Image (cartoon, rainbow, N blue to C red; front, side, top):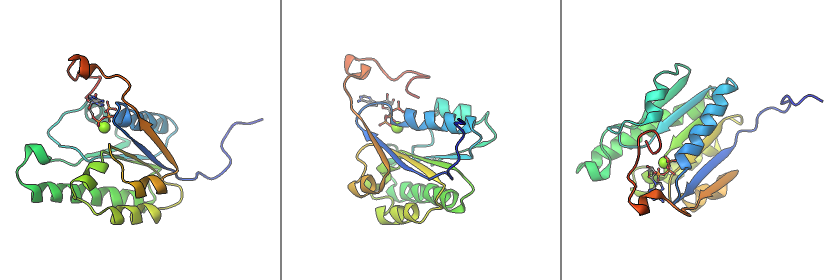
Length: 179
Ligand code: ATP
Ligand code: MG
């Protein structure tokens, strides 16, 4: 019996939330898997753009992967909330187009939940874009404190529980492990 997929893909809405480490890592693991299968992948990180991350550096070596970082400072680095809001809006416009076009099989919205917490983006607008997306598009959203309405809409929700984290033992974030 062949194990090849015969059903047309059913796009899933996946949410990785909770206070434990592993949300972004899980999303990037899915990207790794999807790229291996030739899926067309876009990642949009809703994080302060100054931070260099390992995933961002590696993405530069993968021409088939579209990788966007929101850019600018973010809240605690910037005293200009309007500028942060505009950066979140611009990142969302990119994400919205990637999702709506149907030309990507997987779109990751990393740390998107923070934009709701800071009122940078209206939740309803994001939910509407997810609701009306082409049927084959998988969307993965990460971040703490995911809103209830998003969890309700999701097909898959995994909560990372912080059972133990080296930070509490005084171990600082490490290159290649945390960023
Ligand atoms: P990762 O990117 O490592 O998968 P994450 O996406 O689950 O982590 P975020 O809330 O985005 O977690 O925070 C990212 C950073 O915070 C990482 O450096 C991570 O090690 C650290 N971190 C995550 N969870 C905890 C925790 N419970 N205590 C302290 N630091 C944490
Ligand atoms: Mg994260």
